Image (cartoon, rainbow over all chains, first blue to last red; front, top):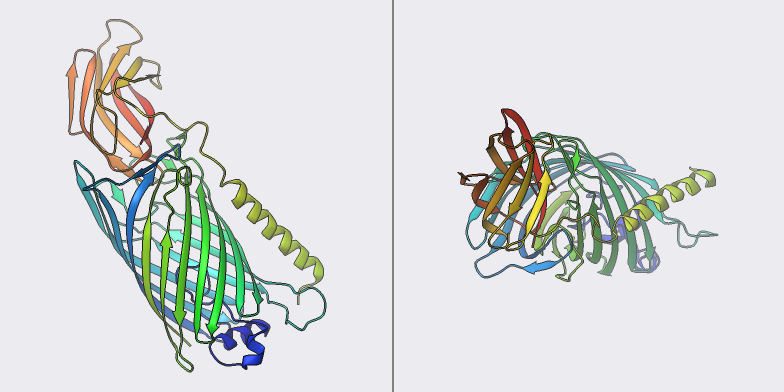
Length: 299
Length: 144
């Protein structure tokens, strides 16, 4: 009930007095690992367009190299997400993407276009946040997160849009409201199945993600957010042999915002993500900036 | 409603997940592969032990198109050695590449036109035959 009331406030459904004590839920802020629907809603859809532009790459020792003249690495992606909330505590969702990645360097170009991997998500709100006036220690909201990635992505020119294998992820997110602010932390670990999508047996290393997020509601209809995340992947193995130094690490910072008019079911949003181009920050990754525009409809 | 014991257990699980994520974000792997610069040589014994392979480049291996030299010395002198295929793989992303030409020049093979699309760890594999038996040799390199 507390979670539901907090969400309702964010969109103008409770009093301004209550707003100063328990801001809102983080539902639907684009670019973040949050639920699409509020606990009082039953379903929702979201479409988004993302454009990514690389500024450089980190090698296996963390040395950064800025892309040179004539080099580019661009990705354009369309996303469609559908979410269902069979109970107020559980949200199930699936998202599909269609995109294109093109890159060029001094001597060649390559591109791949088509479907990306299909992702299934489940988010269960295990604990709801304590009421601000409740006696004792205020407990944050706690959600358990699971996801399954299916290897449906296109592959061409030696490039792939997706992972090329099944991935199973489990995680947890905590969120706590402080006045008009809300703070969140998320941790997720994932395991990947062996695959032969490259013509040889390959096993990707495990993946871990940590993310910190802060939300702020300057107005009950508008939420802005700032986030930072660190993603790590262990070394892969090929034909049973570990490929040393093939693991990855990526640090991202981001900001986002979404707006929902009082009484409306439509929520447009924007999110920006950026990988700071500092040495030793990334390993075996492309660094860049991405902008995501989205529209969600929930009820 | 969950009892306090369940809440504490949930907190412990979360703390462990956070700790794992934090710890795994530490520095580059100490076993990260070397760059292959101009004039430098990487030497490996093939998986089957049939040949010793030396990989070199006259120009540093970089993102883009590269030309390499692969010298194969059979473990038993006088045996014939043949390169059947040469491939490059970035296992973390599924990037792959093959050379446009493999040209035998005595015990050395010119591997030309190998397009590496990204900085980072690549695995280069030569599939070969030595004295009629199949074998392979794998080099790990870091592309700057």
